[in-house]
Amino acid sequence: MLPRLLSLLLLLLVSAFAAQAQDVLTKQSGEEIAVKVLEISPTGVTYRRTDNPDGPLITVRKTDVFMIRYANGTKEVFDVGNAPRSLPAGPPAPAGQTYSGPAVPGDELLTEPTVNLGGPRIGFTVLTGGAADKARKDFKLNPFLTQFGWQFETRIFRLSSGLSGLVEVVPLIGGLEQGKFIPSLNALVGIRGPKGFEFGLGPNITPAGANIALAIGTSFKVEDVNFPVNLAVVPGNGGVRFSLLLGFNYRRR
Figure 1 (cartoon, rainbow, N blue to C red):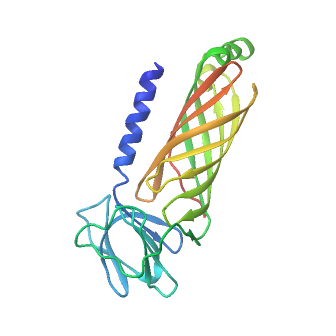
Figure 2 (cartoon, rainbow, N blue to C red):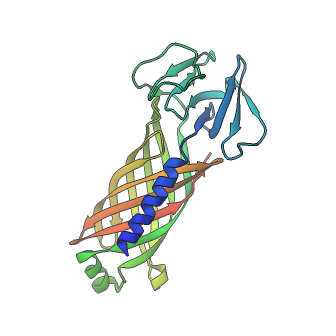
Figure 3 (tube, helix red, strand yellow):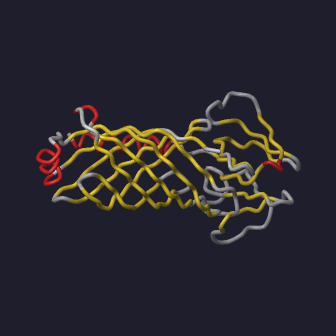
């Protein structure tokens, strides 16, 4: 059963990575939009949304744009004076596409508003080895149990390469399908790459004790909603707990 679950997770991760081949426009407010940039004029940026490629052309004022991250990995940051700075962080720009402004080598810490995200999480946990034996003996739990909870995420910094630092708190309730109430709390410090891949490490607290959780995954965006997919591994009690969590989150003002 576990190999099938891991294969399903791999398929979801590959699909999510494929969805990242797009430009991302970040506004001064911190809002991110998946787009295809068509033109940058002295006063505005014209684009089409990637979720509606045949839709209307949309133009926003350049004063409202903080940064454009192109699909090829190149960034263009707009200063207060609206002069864009090219920040190459990947292969050269495709033929026919030019970026104005001087190139800035290396990574830079970008100043932007702190971003808070929140949303529901659902999934399941599989217990193995001694962890499964302890669950049966002490809590009369089957080794497969569902999980329901909520994710609280704060993005604390972002680099010009698109790499972000995150702090996540995820409280969960497991075992409801077995008539049980098994709470857990996960607090993770992690990193998210420019394409959405992420990993984190932090404490996991349950009635069975405290352990360290390692989580990896990705997130992809549809309009203004993020859809994360994460696999968490928690060793301890003579076995390992594997948890697969899905959900969505949105910006909290």
